[in-house]
Image 1 (tube, rainbow, N blue to C red):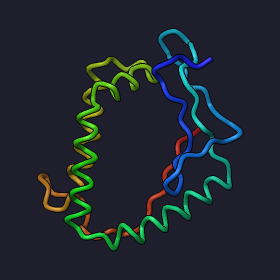
Image 2 (image 1 turned 180 degrees about the vertical axis):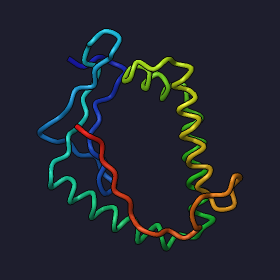
Image 3 (image 1 turned 90 degrees about the vertical axis):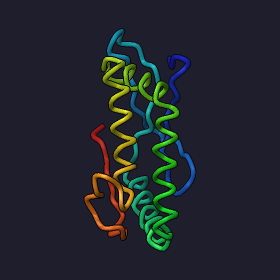
Image 4 (image 1 turned 30 degrees about the horizontal axis):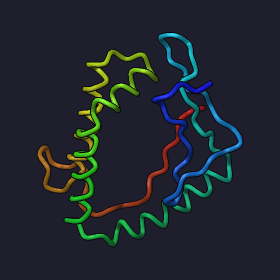
Length: 139
């Protein structure tokens, strides 16, 4: 049973959400209760993600650097605005103390901000997109 206040999370692929036949429970480590469910990607989902990432890369690489920078700054601003909510979810998912979870959100914001060309400290890469990146987590 899913508790309210924690969303069931699907896969976001190519601009839309999808569900899967298989999912994983999100368990609150403080009490062992299932608080949500995460979609578990299968081989076809992963192929679809890679195709969508490749198409997205084509669009992103043709986007003006200023527009890319504005989008990264906007993502960081939205995370800062939702810091308390995100930190709460991190605490429920991982059992991390709330103050540490808030710092983790701030670090995530800094990741976006430092990816902006000309940022301080300087971005670690060029201002030109290089390739799509595909990351997975164990499950």
